Length: 255
Image (tube, rainbow, N blue to C red; front, side):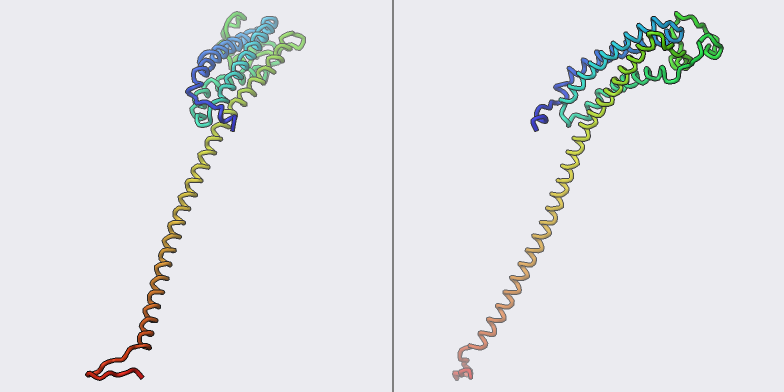
C-alpha cells in the first residue's frame, strides 16, 4: 500500500521522461547506428584494427544506452497503474528502436562467411566498387558477405564483449516492456474486479427487490386470510349468542 501511495500521475513525470525519450535515447541510438555502419565497413574490408576500435566504441555506446534506459525504467515504475496505457504509447517507439538496434547488431555474426571477400563468391553481383573507404550500400546486403574475424585478431575478443553488452541491452528492453505491461494488467485487473462487484451488487439488488415483493405479497395474503377467518368467526359467534328477537310485537327468546 505504501508503494502505491508513492505513485505519480504520468503528467507529473512526463517532462523528465521526455528527456530520455526525445533526447538521450535517440542520441545513443543514432550513435549506435553509426557504429553499426562502420563495423560493417571495416569487417567487410578486413580492417581488423579499426574494427577492434569500433567494437570498443560501440560497447561504450551500448553501456550508455543501457544506463539511460535504466533511469527511464525507474521513472516508469513510479507512474500510477491508471496511466499504464498512456505510458505504453509514450515509450513504445523508442523501446522498439532500441530492440531493433540490438537485434541488427547481433545478426552481424549470425552466419559469417569463411571465405575472404576477394573471392568471386563474396563480391557484389552488381559489379559495384569494393573500395574499403566507401560506405556500405546496403547493410543487409553486405551483412551476408561479411568475412569471419580471425580468432587471433583483437577484434574477435572485442566483438565477444560487444555481443555480451548487446544481449544485456536486449534483455533490459524485454524487462522494461514487461514492466509497462504488468502495470497495464494491474489496472485491467482492478477494472475487472470493479465491474464484477458492480454486477454482483446489481444482481443482489434485483434479488432483494424480488424478495421484498414476494414478502409483501405473502404478508398481504396472510392478513387477508386472517381477516376472512375473523369475519367468519364473528358471524358464527353472533349467531350462537344472538339476543331475543321480537316478532309481531311478541318477544321471542332463542331456544
